[in-house]
Amino acid sequence: MAFWDTLEKDPFEHYFQAVIYLVFTLLGKFAICEMHTFSGRIDCKVETKDYIYLFEFKRDDTAESALAQIDSKDYTLPFTADSRKLFKIGVGFDSASRKLAGWEVA
Image 1 (cartoon, helix red, strand yellow):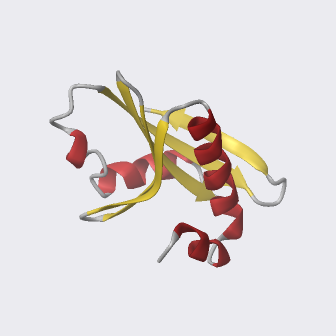
Image 2 (tube, rainbow, N blue to C red):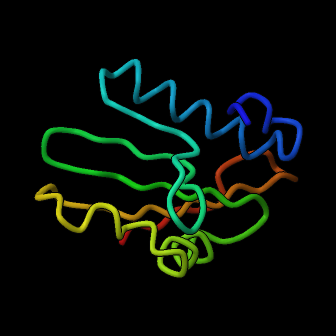
């Protein structure tokens, strides 16, 4: 299933996912959305020379819940041998106000 095909399932979350992807891509950073792992899909991964950022987005849920999903599904496992510093970023969006509700970094 292509990224744009998933927009029908949860258009709000994927809208923000697409915006974040475009911002990092326009900044010249390597970004992948919906990256498959053995236990699920990482919402967005951004790579730089020194860092890897893993984003998990939640609609009408907390940033802490998003971080918990990164841990529970072992999204960091494919990057354990990578020497770059890894950041896990949980992001919560509020669909009623249509804005960022919170974010947390681990």
